[in-house]
Length: 431
Image (cartoon, rainbow, N blue to C red; front, side, top):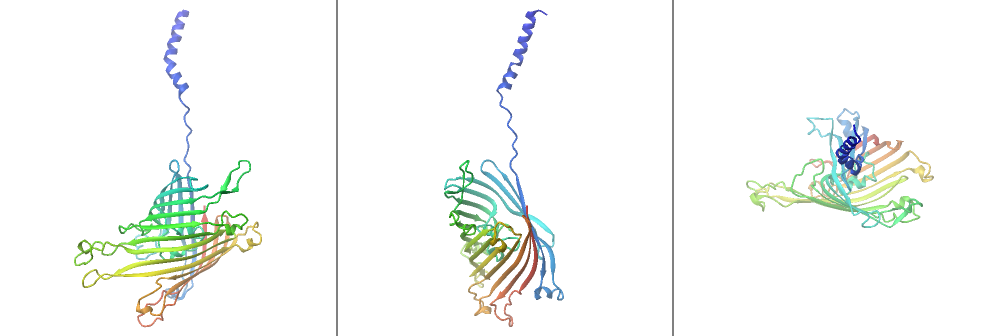
């Protein structure tokens, strides 16, 4: 082969490969595969209970009812959803103990407790550490989740949830403004970075109203607002216990649809076909104050509710009558590690817990059965806890609910709910 032929072949190969070589030189490197951060956590709690009150024993020939139970299993999944976006899903494992509703299945079932998307914006726009986030889906209601940051839910529901003020979660939208402040606590001298202590937060919701365990039952929506302030968080020289002081006023404005919203034959409401289109008042408000530190956690609360109800058939012969009632709850609790008060560096697995609720279903009863009385219920909880690990706690506790200031049970008068007394061995595991 002549040198001229070799040169011609080489030139042909170069021309053929030139586009591929150029593309290889200019194409950017393939981006690294990034797996989104996935967070899985949960809480499981349950108990062994032993009833000691006479009303419970009466159904068993004087013997004590007792049982093992799994009270709740909350499994939480969190994941980013783009820049500043995120999702959260929390399942609620529970047992249906309503005998009128558990003919199909009497074991434990799974339902959604929280399921929402969240977007966070305006970071540091209202001071260092501030932000504004929005949520839509099944989300936290105005104050119960906030209180559960102080009170251990595995022992008992918070007072307002236990006494039926509203549910701890509901479907709707929410916004939370975290209040910023001037940076205060140095983090690293080399970088000069500082950690801000925020002044608190403002949380607002618009929800369906019935709660996460029910579908929407009427056209009305409930509005709620909470402001939580930590006025001592930035005060240098104060005890961490005092710096944790939080005060949280809140308000909840709601409505229920009338039983006669659709109207009907013979009904005399102002709407079409005798329909009652106005809502029945369902208002609540209160104030909660708390301390939260390892050596001492405490809380106190005053809350009131106003509810309207209706009687009659909304007809000329049986007119609809609207009644209103005002209920009230006052409660307080303390969780303490007394041995750490003398030496905070020596961590103790032991703690004690005490709680008292006073619930008045109606502060001004009008029934003839309750003349001269204002029936109420007192709830007491006393217990001692032991931390088997940093995330596993066992508590032996005594719980009692007693009716008070009811009229004497004579004739056909309404009798109070019997006293309930139970001994518990509770367990709580977070992971």
